[in-house]
Image (cartoon, rainbow, N blue to C red; front, side, top):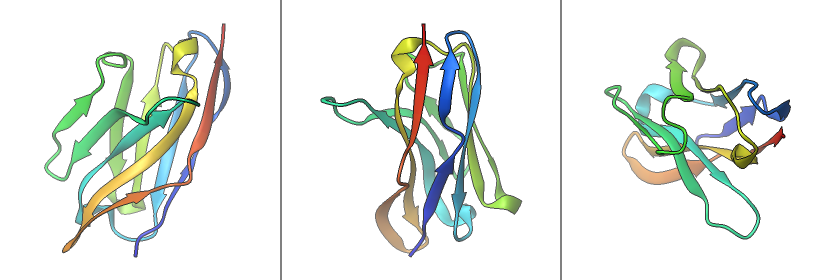
Length: 118
């Protein structure tokens, strides 16, 4: 079992920046994919950014050029750097880990709230 714990959410003005962190209880190198999703009330959870073990990244069109996903394997932590934030980025952001070792299951953090004021 692997636990994922997010931190770094908060309130920021439009145009500002935040960095989210996702700390894993075990080696993130063993994940096939890690990433970030977000969800607002009444809507489905949506992909924000993912990064595969080999380093391939994928971003939602709405965040391309503004958000960057990265990892620090030594710290077992994945980051989401968010720049030029917009009010529509307001959501609960969830850390995701897919396929850890031989376990094909999905792992989720508890979520962290990001609120962007206009």
